[in-house]
Length: 325
Image (spheres, rainbow, N blue to C red):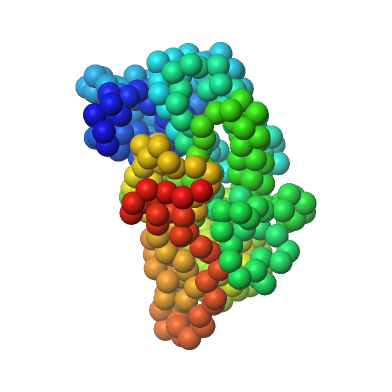
């Protein structure tokens, strides 16, 4: 980070999301001043922690925002050089939440366009914005040029994917119309410290719980019935199930801001899950949100390997030595 960046002020909106909170922590550790914009979603443990941090951290200011209230966003952005837009529904996703997230994304980008100090928008999206459509299992390379199909997502009730795809597309359209400098980060399933405690419903929305059988993703839930994380099963089978550690993800967001040549979209993941061994590791990382029945300890075969289709070459260039459009 250069000296000029170290004196920058960044807004994290919504800072009370799991990703937003880790971006906030990383920014403060690097010497940035931070406006923590918190949506009015009711009290949460992360929000309480942020408000406690404000009392002792002079470079942190907390703002209450409503993403449907354009003026409250403008207030939180004042004097900021960058905004990290991390919209996520703490209650998970349904059809109504899709519309709310799209409208929120539009308001955030529009507010950035009317804030002279803003130099860059780092928009946090998801891999689900790119991997859901009929022919995904036949495509060799799934990269940043790909988008999920709107009709497919709506018909399958993939609300998380639909919200992320439509909100990111809306943000890109408006950013280009307003000639704003924007970069988007598309992470895989997010894992990390206490993710089952702090990010349970968005996690399950990513995985899409439905009733259908598929060996490695069949678990006992608290409802005493067998259910399947259907989305995870289909992603796994098609070679597009991947996860990313939240600390690495936060670093990537900040890198995308600091690197002046960063542009466009970036797929972000640490590991593609395409074997039963990797699937089991993922399940264990999400415990107790997704408990693994004891009987599976002796059933694991570890023989099936699915073809990897995801590509993140662009991210590697950003992390290692710059970036390429």
